[in-house]
Amino acid sequence: MQRKSVRLSLVAMAAFAAIGSAQAQSYLNVNFNGTQNIAGDTPAFRGSFTYNGVVYGPSSAVASADGSVTAPTVNSLNLATFDEDTLVSTDENGVKLGNTGTYKYSDGTRGNAVVYRFYRQQYSGIAGNLTKGANNEQEERKHFVKAIVGQGTDYDDLPSSGNYIYEGIAFSNFPTGDFTYTVNLASKTGSGSFTLDNILVPAAWVGESGAAKRLDVGGTLNTASLVADANGIVGSAGVEGGSVTAGAQNPGDASQVALWNAIVSNSTTTVDPKYYLNLFGTSSGTDVAREVAGTIIGLPERIGGVAIIGTR
Image 1 (tube, helix red, strand yellow):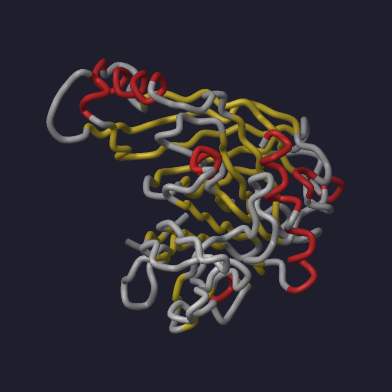
Image 2: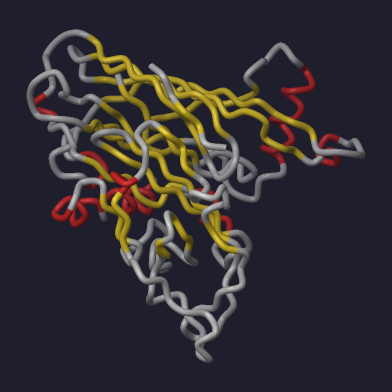
């Protein structure tokens, strides 16, 4: 497969549950005023960004009382406007999608810097959003994936034998890597792997001085059973809370293992990774369960939540 790159616990499941209403308009539509997957923190996307000359963002959250910062003009985004199989983090001029924290909420509170990333396939898409310095920063980092939208493939529409093998990418607010996943259609189970490259780790965390060190992470998405209507998406099979084993990509490199141990020991959030994903595509024909898309949560805070998306 060719790819281009430009450049839940119950709480986590809520990110998926919001998809049903989006499907009524377009199965690739993201509503920026929808409830996000952090309890008590709405709307899903703080701040705003410009893409192809159009300003997007949650109008209920962004505006200043004196009018110096206006509310965004469009509150939803159809991911079909983006190129397929492309990680998008910049606008048409190469400017990062997001803002520098200069906007204000409607109550006058100054906002924080926001990073946006989008990836879409023919039948599914992921929108990621990281708010730096937010009151719920730890939760934000755990739940980088704010929306997964798509046309689900029902559990009952899956073939009874064979394997579906998917390849794609894993990405977070900055790191990217590879993602593979295999669905065993006879047993209705899935398993896979992911990588994330060049994660910066403060040198002081390993008792050194100078520039940050770089860590390449690898992980296994352990075998888990597919269930119907997974993660709140009616009509889509998927995995809910499969276990993840993660560490340095090269366990034979002591320095890389030390970096992994350092980000684990310095994490202020519990390190207990799980993965959630759904199957997307048609209900019949060659594109049944053509794609998968999901998220990994519970990794060390330095890594945060991770999007996983691929096609077969």
